[in-house]
Image (cartoon, rainbow, N blue to C red; front, side, top):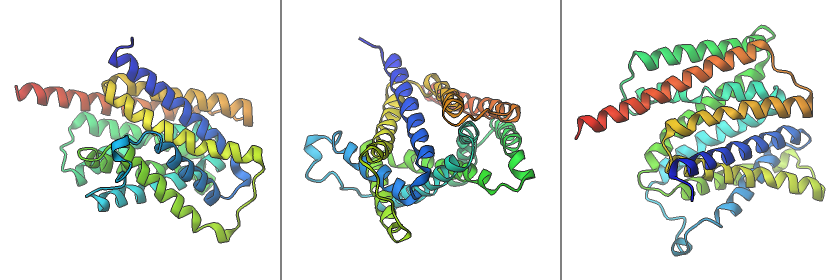
Amino acid sequence: MLSKNQLGFLYMFMSICTFSLMDVIVKWSVDFPIGQVLFFRGFFGIVFYFFVIPRDRFHNFYHTHRLGLHALRCISGLIALVAIFIALRKLPLATVVSISFAAPIFTTIFSIFLLNEKVGVYRWLAVLIGFIGIIIITEPGISELNIYYIFPVIFCLGLSYVAITIRQLSSTEPVWLISFYFSLSITLLSFLTIPQGWVMPSFYHFVLLSFIGIFGGAANLWLSQSYKHSEVSLVTPLKYLALVFAIFFGYFIWGEIPTIKTLAGAFLVIISTLIIFRREIYKKTHYSKSNK
């Protein structure tokens, strides 16, 4: 029998593996329009969530009193998803993953303006370190005027606002409902891209593309389960295994070798996010002690 922390580690590891596999398939799917790939991500994500909806909610699983906040979460999530899909197709896998680690930095900034949170010197230092890391990673793109380096940053901005809205929604909404509405919004958006021309996939390609939705749905659910069973500070460092997977898959599938600048920038971004997470845990611990 696994302890709660061990379960949290297991769920986080499975989440990282499935997210990494999803990224690989998205990068591979370059011959298919992004709108069509979005359809597979959304539709098969919906199918996955029907297996986890509680039986007593089947008759009204869609019911919510916070439709407006769901809409904001979906819009910001769609912006992030489209941006990361474009980035995965146009940039080295390790570069995209490295920049995506910066999402907590933007979440910290958004929390100041949207949640009126007070940010101390340590977290401001972490934000500064993180931005230096991003500049180091994207410097080749800036010097070569490669516009695609902006898309992982857009992904971070969108994902940061997603984190804010999920924090607000999770006080009343189940995880599967939040994810269901997001997958539904992806599917609806994808239909608008049909006039741009979709490609008829072979059976083999159809199965692979469907795994984008299955992996995405499973990864989101396992990520939530990980945070439910274990302390965030214990399981969050496991996220950085995604960079190891990105380097491995990028090298053996596409022959991509990460540059020293990418690795150095990724190191600074990782240090930055670890500082932010540690300060979050300290703040929660200090607050709980002061209220005893």
